Length: 185
Image (cartoon, rainbow, N blue to C red; front, side, top):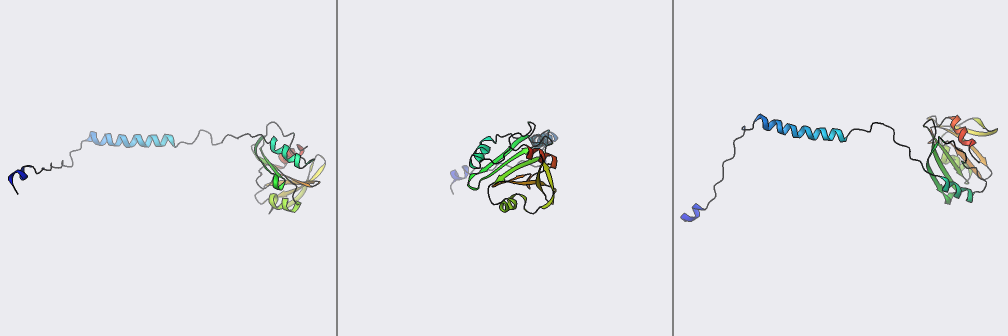
């Protein structure tokens, strides 16, 4: 090794000794962490109301298409204004219509109609329920079905169409189901 090589060897600076941090350094570090915690806390707060807004839809296109395919089938025509239609599904291949409403009382009532075999309709919409005494709607008897969880359904056949108000997803009272059944035209 020559003398010029030794002069070019880089010297490694000494590491700063630990323990020279001051209280100000620790407070600044703690402040950064606390700021991050506060930001996460603010962003993670739930909305002031735990109720989600109900999304209103217009089921008229599905209802019109169903009545075109099933002339004379009773469909919801005079549902109270304070009921909100929230879902609608038309399955033309099986001649099936479902329309869901949130009632004035905040419960869910569903209208379902199908031109399929009545036994298939019952299997789909009220399977696992037990029958109860019939319910009178505008002088007409509707079969009443009660699920284990208390869900109510009213069922009636109109020619080749079976109508179910309530279904297994319903939380509506029997009076609300009477209103929905009475709104059919």
